Amino acid sequence: MTYNRRIALSVCAASAALLLSACGGGSSSDVPSASATFKDALVVGLPYTCKPSGVTGKTDAEGKLTCKQGEEAEFHLGAMSFGPTAVRENDVITPYRIYPDNNEAAVNMAQLLQSLDDDGIYDEVITIDETKLNAVTINLDPTSSTFDTDADKMLSDYNSSLSLVAEGDAEAHMNNSINDTVAPIVTLQGDTAVEVIIGSPYEDAGAKANDDVHGMMTPVMSGSVNTAVLGRYTITWTATDAAGNTGRATRTIDVVNAPDTTAPVVTLAGSTTVHIDQDSIYTDAGATATDNIDGTIAPVMSGTVNTAVAGTYMITYTAEDSAGNIGTATRTVIVDEVVPVDTVAPVVTLIGAATVHVDQDSTYTDAGATANDNVDGVITPVMSGTVNTAVAGTYTITYTAEDTAGNIGTVARTVIVDAAASVCQNVNPITGACEDTPVVTQCQNVNPITGACEDI
Image 1 (tube, rainbow, N blue to C red):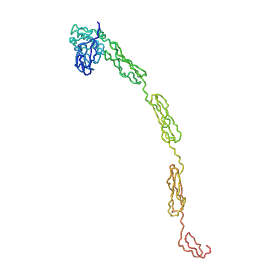
Image 2: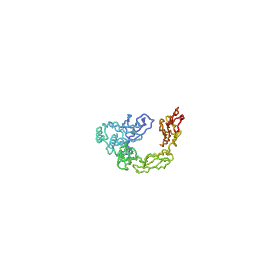
Image 3: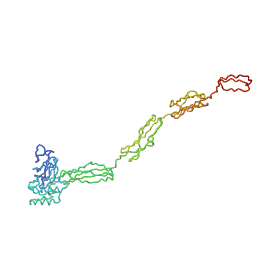
Image 4: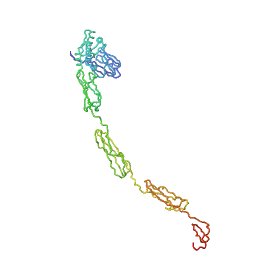
């Protein structure tokens, strides 16, 4: 048998909203058509239904059909239906396209189409008339392993002159018509290069395959990834069409260590807060730094301390690892203002004389004292001691003043209470003989002694 022509079913796809009457089924003539070809000789008179619109028709003399853009077409042979398959602009539909994952089913479909040609000469055109449509009395399943037997019996039961075209002849005719030399296009889902953290699970994102003849195909994956071992791995997705054309796509997977997100630990030598005297010399105690990956790192110091000026200063140590993580530690340095040590006691000054005489039984009120300090200034001194004017004697009144530095100054006043003298008034003159010696008392205004005494 010779195969000098392609066998084609042309499919015309309209715009999204209108049917193309030029393709044999619509009413709009002002929308340009787009055609696709079903390869296994032009199939004329093949019933179809557009889904989901429900538009029905038969392929015209050029093997074309009309559906809305984006719809699917389901084909009918008597009691049998096959498809649906997408109707796309400038597309090619083949039995391989209808059964992308089952080459045997595609060949079975070609066998039946070729067997139903009205004149048995299907090199150029397969024409299916109503009589041949009626020959398909059962809903045959092209994927069934008994398809050849079931189809041949169905045809011979309808008309003893009908028989199923041999499988090998049908496949050779279809492949010769298609003349497929283009490999399927395999497209990876996801990135072509992937990094996986060691020890974590990996599941490939998969791939899709599309063939110009077979349509969508299921690619096969090869290769594996051992996420327990660092290294580079490849996963390859392969799709081979019925003509033996092979397409492939490869993904590279690198198993890597987990990224370093831990900052170095910076540790200050010495206290985090330091006090120093103003105008002294300050040398920072330093710091060390360690990293979980890089080990020991030399931290860098920033900040200065001006010991001439009292205040608070910050010294910061910074360490950065090879992954760019930064750790810091800060010391607070407080420069304290130096205040001279006060060792001078307040000066306490008495008001009035340091020694005072008062008469016994008189009233005594001390004149007081004042106090002045070289730092604190005027201070109020505190008096201690008492004077009992009822009892003659010497008493001490002390004034004490203490400054804020604890220095104490004192001063004392001596108060002498003098005993009172006896006063005799209107004392009669001493008269009489001189046998007795007169007694002279401490009296004032004593009358003179008179008498005739030789010795007193």
